[in-house]
Each structure stands twice: as structure tokens, then as C-alpha cells.
Image (cartoon, rainbow, N blue to C red):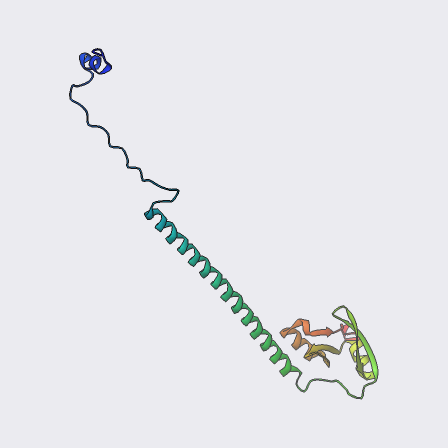
Length: 167
């Protein structure tokens, strides 16, 4: 084959007679479906970091929930202590009371024994009923307003004042 493509290019002056060095081919790694050791180690490190990050995030989330629960418990304890201090000596409950006073609390009709004068005072709005420590307490309006500033949910019955003062 005297007229090969290479001979024709040399005659035309487009190629030289010196042989060109062959281009080096990238070496192939014989694999059996696994990544090379260096890539596999990098992947394992990345997975390890990912698991560590996830564990840390979950731990922080648990700690945050625990902190919030602790703050809520402390707040409730403080409120309970304040209401107890306000109610101490201010209760108007009478053990000898025989008149039923019915009212709604937590979507149920409740009953409390009061005297005739206390029933009239609650109806006029000068006294109020407060729920504290699983009991109903009858207190003056001023005491009920102080309790409402601490915890409004403790007030069960506090009617608007009636009479000549608001006429």
C-alpha cells in the first residue's frame, strides 16, 4: 500500500515523517461493581458526618422541647404560688351556706353552696367565683381582678356590676 493516507499527507506537506507519540490513555480500574477504595472511604466519612449531624439536630430538638416543658412547669408553679398568696385570707366561702348557686364551667353546669347575701353579691357583680386547686372559691371583685391579671382562666364567674354606680 504505497498510496496510504499517511504517504499522501506527507507528499502534500500536511504531516511529518516523524512518528507521533501516542496519546496516553487513562488507566481503567478493574472493578467488580464497587467504588475504588478512596471513593468508598470518602462516602463512608460523608455518611458518618451525616449521621452525626442528624443525631446532633435530633438531640438539640429534644433538649429544646425539654427546656420549653421545664419553663412551662416553672411558669405554672409561679402562677399557682401567686394565686395562692392572693387567695390566702381572702376566701369568702361559708361552710354553713345552704343556697345553691349554679354556673357553667368547662362546658358543664356546676353547683356551689353560698348564703343568700353571697348569692345576691355574685348576681350584682361585687363578688366572683374563682377555680383554684380543684376547688371553687368565692372572693370579692377586687381580689378576682388581681387573680385575673395573673391567670384569666382561673376566673369562672365575674358578672358586670349592676346598680346605681353604673346607671
